[in-house]
Length: 176
Image 1 (cartoon, rainbow, N blue to C red):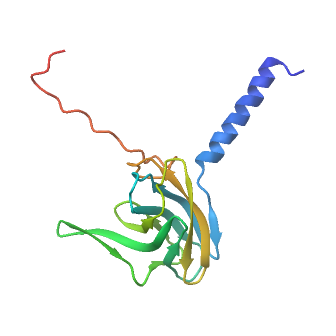
Image 2 (image 1 turned 45 degrees about the vertical axis):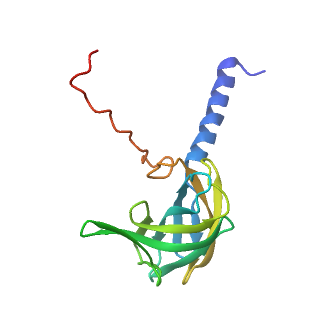
């Protein structure tokens, strides 16, 4: 029989291992590309669009290009760019794809490059894993899962990108 201290240590180690593994983002390799931190945001019921975000590192000596995607969750998946020009926010599909230069890392994140999933077939719920297939010019088709975060998430879980809630305004007429 195990002594209580050893039993506690064994249980604590097991719990820590489980939480550490779940906090680590999936890493997918495709040719010279390494894809990490694939995630999305939860959507309200009835929403027809959602964004997908991830990081792509090119460890090779030649560029590759993300040219599109697909998934059972959506009717269509496109690569998009969001930008602010002269104070006006614009979003557009990248018809010729997104180039990942050799030795470089490209981050698809809110407010910049992202996947746009159209005609959602069901709601994305926090905690879900949504499979999508990305298509690269050289690396080909790559299937991975987007980890669905909360509605206002700014980064994947464990990346330190939690959303700060604004502080309530100070009112001079409030009495404590």
